[in-house]
Structure formats: structure tokens, C-alpha cells
Length: 371
Image (tube, rainbow, N blue to C red):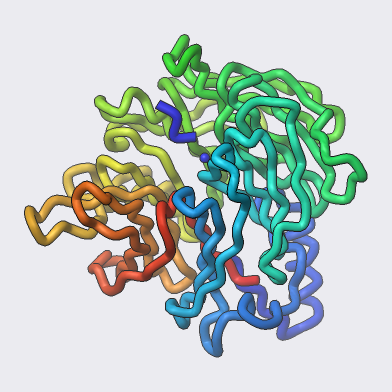
């Protein structure tokens, strides 16, 4: 039950650059804080500076690949302990915060040097979702203790001691409108005890500012769209169709509930054009237009790489679009079926399958960024 968890700056004119810097300084999760091109691997290749960042649960690592040269990769180990169970991450500039699951800790990773700089630890529990409030402040969810913790990347201590209680089983985090948003599955012993809950938190005081129900059970993932709204996936029971709640984080009201989001939807990303990519192990990737609030590719026609043996769709653990519109989709792999893990690449608009990229064992979460 626990499926717990690009911007391109072109500074041709000083005024435009300053405006972009002011905008990104106000952003929360994933807002780039360094406008100059990254050196080395993170700089990509001529004509395509974008980098894919993947969490590998199978190898307990991060794999990065250059979109312009997909066979050029870098892998960053996150630890060898059996308690290290990463499934997601959050980005800020050239750093990643990676919750390490049963290790009850968060790794702070320098993507430029491809090293883990520090670990920040909860006393116990399971660290899942994370989000950056600014360049130096990270929030992480502890699913087992029902707490959200805050730490600063330059703090002396490694312990996460500043916490706030939220609804049971927080699994995902987001940031918008100057507030941290914690998405809770509202579970007891992995069984829903009510609708999912989103809790808004003041990042400075750790005070709870409000809550709103998600209209469905067992939400596992969420993201902020270009419209500033929060899109929450109600994963449900992995048998019936899931749903998606649309929440205004400024007012903490649910403005819509969209049904039929596939069986067990577990990951969502939204591109700059407002296309939401909703992935699951059962239904591959659905495409939903947040502007028209209509499917582009629905449950009956998902974006997927079909198996040669029976023409059935492979599932998807995560997906994200490049600035070109091409869709990159992670397939976890299946040893029992002899299917290797890949990142599949689809054309923009037509979603025709064009390529497959080797990205390591057990790829769970994907982001595409220009660093």
C-alpha cells in the first residue's frame, strides 16, 4: 500500500536576467537558484543542456543522464544499508534532498560534484517526501511518526528536531503561496481511516495554517501546476480507479475532484504548458490537460511501451517532459517477466515511442532540469 513519493534560463539581456532571478527567488520547490550554466556533466551538450535525474531504488542511488547524449551517465550512491529505501527526491539549484525511507534520514546531494554532502536524521520512522522552501531550508515527511520535519542545509547538528504533527501517514510534500504543503494518506496500519488530508504549514513558525480533505483515499503524490494549484493523486486501493483532487493552496479549498485517473496512480508531473503526466504501475502514463480539464490520453489509451509477447502495456513508475515536449517515462522492470528497466522516450503530441535509455535498476522517480 505504500507507494510512498526545467527550466531554461537565457540571460541575453541584463534586465531579463534580473527579472528571472527575482522570480526564481520567490519560488519554492525545484526553483533554480544558480542562473549560470553548470560546468562539466551537468552542463549537458551543445544544443541540449537538459539533464534527467532518476532515483534508483534497486541500487540505492541517483542516476543522471544527458538528454542530448543519453548514454552519458553519472551515478551517485546513497548508502549500502538495507534500511536505505529511496523512492523520490526534491531539487533546488544543483542540490537534491533525498529521503532515505526506512533509514529515517535525508541525504543532501551535490549534483555538480556527484557526492552526498550530508545526512540529516529523524530519531526514528520512515522519511518519504521532501520539499525546499528556499535555498537553505528543507522540509521532510516522516510517514511512521506523522510528523513534518524542518532542517537547514548549513546547520551544525545532523538531527531533525524542528517538527510539527500532521494527519497520519504523510507521504508527499509541495510548496506554494509561501507555505509548505504536506499530503497525508490518513492511514492506520496501511488501511485508510478517512479521506486524505493536505496540511498547510508556515515555514518560519511551523504553525499549521489549515487543512483540506482530498476527496479520496490514500493520496501518495502531488505537485504544483503552472496555475499555482495543487494537484493531488488519490491512489486508493490499487484495484478501483483513483482520482485527482485540485486544491487552491492559498485558500486551502478543494476546487475540483477528477475521477478515473487510472488504477493506483502514484506519480504526477506537470509541464509548462499545463499537461499533467499521471503514472502508475497498472495504467502506464495518462496525459491530462489542466487548462481544459480533459484527457489527452486517458485510461483506455495510455502512453506506454508495449510488450512484444502480448502487446500489453508496461507500467510506469514516473514520467516527465523535456522542454521539447518529448516525454520520458520510467519503467521499473520485471525480473519475473524478463523485462529490463528503462526510461522510454516518446515524441511530443503524438507520443510515438522513439527510444529507450538504460537508467539503472529499479528506477522510481524522474525529473528533467537544466542546471
